[in-house]
Length: 442
Image (cartoon, rainbow, N blue to C red; front, top):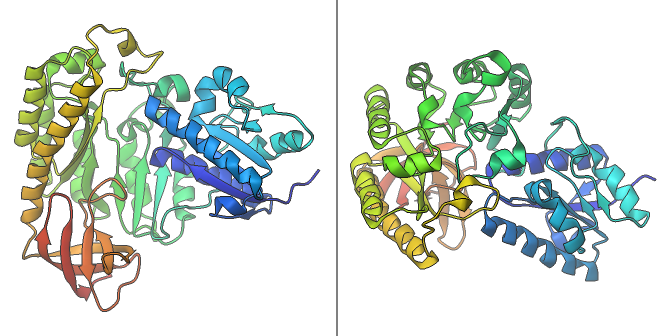
């Protein structure tokens, strides 16, 4: 049986999950099938799920239920793949009867075989069918001028709040030469964004040591890559060699995403993190000494079990001292099958919500002060498109990663997506800049 169907896909969760979704689309296109971005037009819908947090699992289930309503239109089959079935297929298969096919995170090559069985009348559970991660071709879903490169999967850090090792297994680096070939085939990019659960440990399993710097050097030689951005750098694995490469390599954006999760030693130890308040501040000082304009982004968890009001206030003071450019704050989510789930001293939801709000309030002042420093100056901005509601173009300065940080809104006679413009900054708020172009620079 040969399936010639029109496919749609909804991909939930992080940018790493996005890359997995792009590989699913690569399989679909490889079978000669049409892909639509309108779910109501799809005959087969694929929902690529996240299961990192309870809220993400609920979003995934709600999305499947919503997608099932398209059966009243053209939808014939609903496929659920990714982290949710990978971890929870035992509970999911019997309960989520709206889905016809279930695949795990590495089972994309079996999509059409599973669909053929489904069209023959079966509900299909192919989770864990694949014994290896066959990455294959991708269909990019980002704007054409930037793309993500997922350099590894899995994680060995075993933070006590995190399900990722239980879902995706041990840390697995992808071979360097394969990554370079993949990046070379992504087209002309203003920015290649390296992602993994922990980019800084790249190569430990394959090559016996950290090889992220070697990978950066090889990727930097590609003519189709203008700049490279690093996300998800585990703080204790940031080496002097990596810092020097960021300083000396003109293709590497002066930006690091360094998930810290907390500032206080007792909470960090309970989280299974190896850092301390002092080591984090020392790292930031070393980074800024080597790369004075380095923009650091991080994430923090509020309301971890037993976190006291004093520890919460200490984290607020840390934000004032660290002067991080961008931060994300999340209320602790109690996840089954993690060590932290069993901890006594769970914090009530209203307290966690308040602490998140207070952290955002402190960081907003820090970010506002940083952005105010750009008012009256000219800064280089990559155009990402148009905001029709605001009636202007949108873009990003070097200290803004796509979708997670702020935006530069600018007026211009014309601007082309993917090109860089020099923008005179007229004003700033807590997270965004506003201005107009003075010239195109590339």
